[in-house]
Amino acid sequence: MRHTFFCIDGHTAGNPVRLVAGGAPLLRGASMSERRQDFLARFDWIRTGLCFEPRGHAMMSGGFLYPPTRADTDIGILFIETSGCLPMCGHGTIGMVTFGLEHGLIQPATPGRLRVEVPAGVIDIAYETEGDRVTAVRITNVPAYVAARGVTVTVEGIGPLTVDVAYGGNYYAIVEPQAGYPGLDAVGASWLVEMGRRVRAAVSAAVEPVHPVDPTIRGVSHVLWADAPASNGADGRNAVFYGDAAIDRSPCGTGTSARLAHLADRGALKPGDRFVHESYIGSRFIGRVEAATTIGETPAIIPSIEGSAIATGFNTIWIDRTDRFWEGFEV
Ligand code: PYC
Image (tube, rainbow, N blue to C red):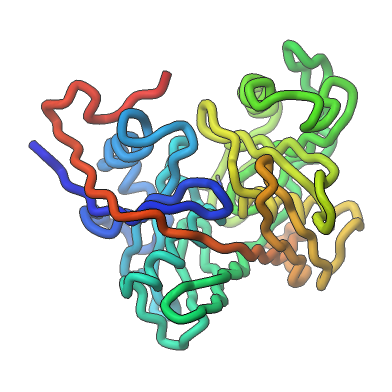
């Protein structure tokens, strides 16, 4: 049996985005969070088939547009990625909103603005256009907060390492330069991947953060290797490790949101402050601390991130069940 998926492929700040514009499964659930659980239970083969080799690669990421479940939102987004079915993805949202608007799949009630339901909650979008192109997308993200401070773990190949854990739509172990991690320029991408796996495993054995309002969002899925900026005008630089072998080519939207919460928590940023975050390949998002807030009783911030995306083409992909690798593979 052959399943056909019509995709718009492209990238946000260098990281891939595959918008599956045709072939999305019908999902059950009263919210995008419940639909995410339904997708994981019944359709995860679509994610692995489209994201893993041979149809994807270690960094592959994307998702589907759905009618929202809430009357106060314009669309719903479900994310797929090599690392799983994320509660929220910043670079993916920037890409999917850009491609959806440019190809008429999203019809905003108010031009320049969208309210989007994602599994992690509701986000607000402001976008700019030039002709038929979307040139910038700003996401006012779900609230971000620091879940754990000063977690010391022992990592083979590094030794003792102290990290903080922060949430920006996914949970991040944030590693700042210290003994054992001398900064991005002193280590290579393969070191960041190998040590990223070990840091995530060690931190996950030490703490399991659970979202204060939605307990389906739990656990450290990503490692943010933080550093000082490499070039003029940026305020910080990072390499985000995700999945089994990926370093985000973008500055990572949820990672930047977590980093904003992290810096705000220690008083280095306050509401209104901007933070230009540079990726491993030198692309940028403009982050901003919009306001202080709470999640339940937990102090948090509302972060925003701005970036842009480029579509690179249409891609009609078959997943044929007679193919030995129909569900994809990782090596
Ligand atoms: O931009 O939020 C993001 C993201 C998550 C994983 C890769 N990119």
